[in-house]
Length: 201
Figure (cartoon, rainbow, N blue to C red):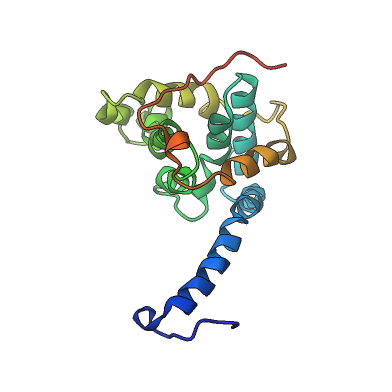
């Protein structure tokens, strides 16, 4: 069997869907590699900053790593802007959808909402609302997102900051995306882990 027999999903049988499931499992196993390739592609995305989108992502992840953040935080920082290419108006939601099955709920929420929190730094200059983050006040992860933006995102546009290469973070991305999707032991709704775990050399 090289392809399914059906042309309409409702006509598929057990053999068809068992065949597809084998393909899906194999494809899911390649998610980390596709994401690493997509990150590399950020080197030729949005322009105008002093650093590329890839350099910004690596800088955010390097800052997270240097703070002693755990692997969920580091991978979240690395991937937080991966949606810029295909979803520039809601890139946080795009990135959050990618990481949601594999990381703590806390990290997913922060990535999803970081765009509104970042407006504090620039919205007043472009006619936006610098206090857009206040719509989320009261969420248990509010302070985490504010810290994420202050410590790792808004300051990661520095061409002189020494970043770790993508290859350094690749094992972490592979580790995270090798986890079983939506594992309650990983997602841990309501759990909060500090962004800083102590400085690393």
